[in-house]
Image (cartoon, rainbow, N blue to C red):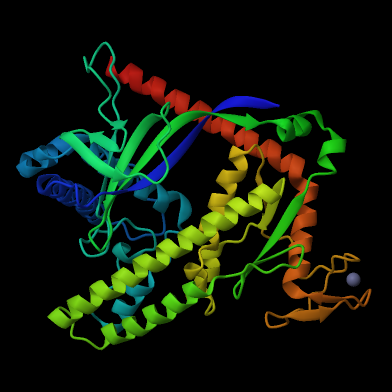
Length: 455
Ligand SMILES: [Zn+2]
């Protein structure tokens, strides 16, 4: 059985460089710059406030009323020339950065960079070096983007049509009358209701438009109903695949298969390393350095695209072949920080892979089950349930002291993850539904609030 549901999606298109008018490009650049400026003005304002109040860390950033953007516009009149909604979004992203610091950081550890600078005597440790503290966005390190929202006609604003529209391959944005031509690989759904668009620029100058939209989709709700009715016949027979994260081969699944991590990817990785080493020997700021930097950035971009392509295809295949997928709810960021695993972990994008899997599975009416962080998937023997706490990180194979079965470390873990995933499937599904309900309620309240405050 299917049900019509509203789903939120995003589609990212490259902007046709050939058809992009020079003045549109410079309008984008202006927006990127002004967004960065507004964000940095807020950071600067925050730092001043924190210094005034003698804040030294150890606690949350106190609640403060942020200055309005109009105040910045008085000082910097060029801010008036760009998309005002873009600036409003810069403010929102700054507010999010504060929330992130308050809710997800410990308010006392410092970044590696701050510790290094303290050690070498260049800069004393202050609250500015705290992990997660909002910091200035630099022009050279990305942050070339701005987000603008779509406004729809209503009685009050007297708009004739939506401010953002997609017509064939053309995207119309506020302040861009002629629209921009996109390279459309997948047609944009006609009934989509656009929420916002983010224009961004990669290091090689390529501009992208990422469109967030809502659309109505048919979702299979057989599994959901089975969960809600406690239908054991269905629940006991679902096909769950367990995945164990593996450094060497991306993942190992509960059938003992290793992900076939493509070789082309490794090759570009080697090349990237080589070119980065070359870069490190060059004089910063010299013309050779700049040339080499753009070379490195190009390879980096290619690697990222290859990876994205690979994990998307892999996620699609796995979600087609299984009813549900179970993974370990490991803290990848925490893992990357300890040991030498760091770089490799960031490189093969397992975190991104999980997010994509989660979305694809949800769209088809299933879920990605995240098995608890403290579940002993590696140490447990899947045959007899014995917990072997003697296993070390380097043991690839081990023999169960209780039942004598020999295990491949990763495969055994994947099987345990699958079994635990199966066990908690129904409860987990319920919790996902509950979360969705809550976030829908919040969105509803927010939009009601917005309506009221406008009146
Ligand atoms: Zn055993």
